[in-house]
Image 1 (cartoon, rainbow, N blue to C red):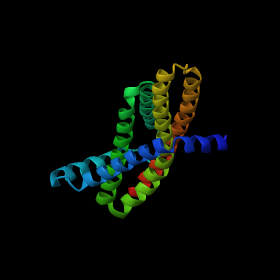
Image 2 (image 1 turned 120 degrees about the horizontal axis):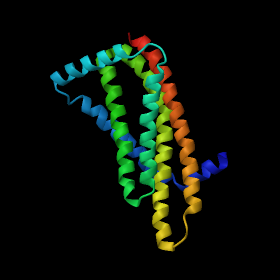
Image 3 (image 1 turned 90 degrees about the vertical axis):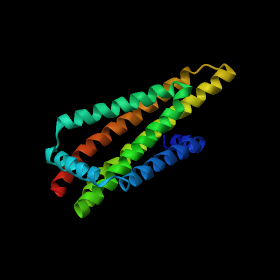
Image 4 (image 1 turned 60 degrees about the horizontal axis):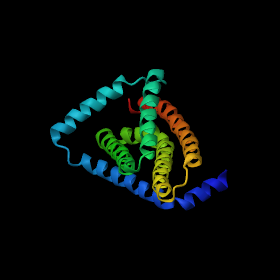
Length: 198
């Protein structure tokens, strides 16, 4: 399995490299966006973040877990569907970039507004679970992009795509399971981080 994964990465390194670049561009734009906020917007966002943190439970909340799982599954389903269409490739990159921008903005704003407590919260509640999340997201996006390119090649050669489709769907389900697991890790880490920032 490990050798197959390494061969897959070697064969599709350019796709994952460009997806990684799209993510990093999104992170950079999100972080830069914090510095262009007006003073009134910063005050409003500070108030909103403060109330949001106060509302979050200091223990694992199952309703929050279900909501996060639902949102992540909807996003993954959208990426899977986009992989079935050639025109979906730019939208896959857009989703990755937007998630990067949201991540960069959130991390930068919390650190600036909450200081050392915010940095501790970011390290514990955001960065730790996000490593798993974004690895799975980039893998899933790479699989979808690769399958879209396979559609182009199959139309040119006339070869059937059933075997590619089943492989694509199976691997996508595995990455979705990993992403769902990262959601639970995020819920646990958020509960710990809430106790820290309070």
